[in-house]
Image (tube, rainbow, N blue to C red):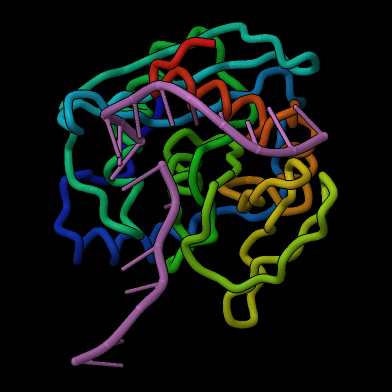
Length: 221
DNA sequence: GCGACAG
DNA sequence: ATCTTGTCGC
């Protein structure tokens, strides 16, 4: 389905060099097909982190009804290293995607898109491998500076690193810590923000990510 | 050298 | 990420 871009088992040093190279291939402009299905992605762990559990939930648009789910478990490959999260989580995610009957036109990932030191967070990296539009929706900040967004749902402020705007800090729900939204691949920040807001339910996280999070952590409802 | 640091 | 009950608030 997705052509191999590179090897996954790399020393941190090599992984970082690869990220800089791949970042040059990430598209920040919109290149979206009509959206009929949106996928949410998240990773969880079992047995003290020994097992990595990738979860993908596909929702229909409009309506956001769940149409398909996929879970893939495998031995954890490497430890968590800030900035190298994709090397730990993307392989398992790709395996989960391969069992899907539906190919979504948009994917939301729990983590950063290009709001990353070398502009290649998990969402951007996954987008390159799947060659699909992806959006990063993180619960906390990895890099960049920003002002506090307004108090109402939908209020947001730009996430800036140096002289570059790498994402947005969005108040997805009033009275709750904001989420960090950034384009992953084949989508602009403005469009990414529109889709995240459109997919908001009554919780902090947009539905795709929220449902994937539950499935990955194997929590019921 | 001293912090910061997605999940 | 994960270990975990009750509790405060809309």
